Image 1 (cartoon, rainbow over the protein chains, first blue to last red):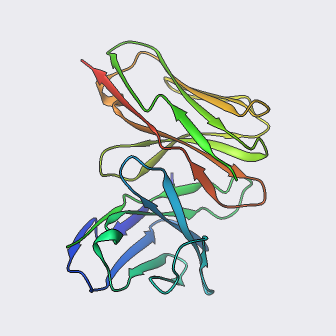
Image 2: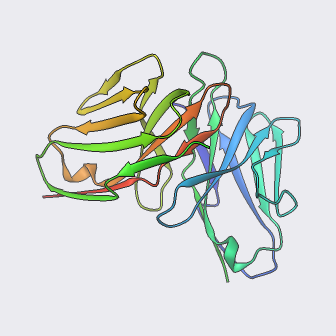
Image 3: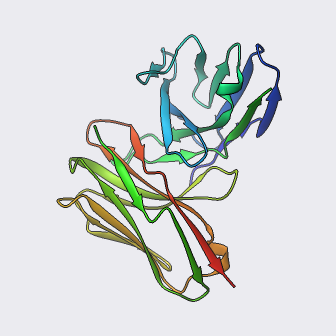
Length: 117
Length: 112
């Protein structure tokens, strides 16, 4: 299957700082990538859909000024958590849609564990 | 609003046992349903994807069924092994949408 990577895998930061997470499709071009958030013992929740060359589409309740998404190329999308606070601590996972075909399956990255002190 | 429920939340079985994980969804107008595996602190690995027109999919020891009209899917794992220990997630996708709606998962422990 298609490979999606994330960097960093784990990050610890101080409250008030900003953190950038990268999501890359390694062996295919992804016009659409997705950012999810996962709290312990909770479902993965879609935060936003990232489209190459255009603005991201955010799900209801997700602050777009808090979670900045940039999809500058066909293989890279970034999520920046601005002015992070302890409640932003979570597991962030991206996925990328393989273009073409009728299935449009999403492949997921390994996730990034963010801890805000 | 689509809601996905997975039962049980946790399951512990001895090695070699066959087992069934359950997934139910409230809106039957789905495009497809997908089963994933997630190891602790890791991302998701896709196991099986069933299109709405299909009844089941098989991969090795795994078999997933779909009854769209009743809003149910099952994941059958045959001859379970300790390496199968993980959290299994079910997700549905609505037609005309890219959005996946996930259940909370079933944490499976296979004891040697």
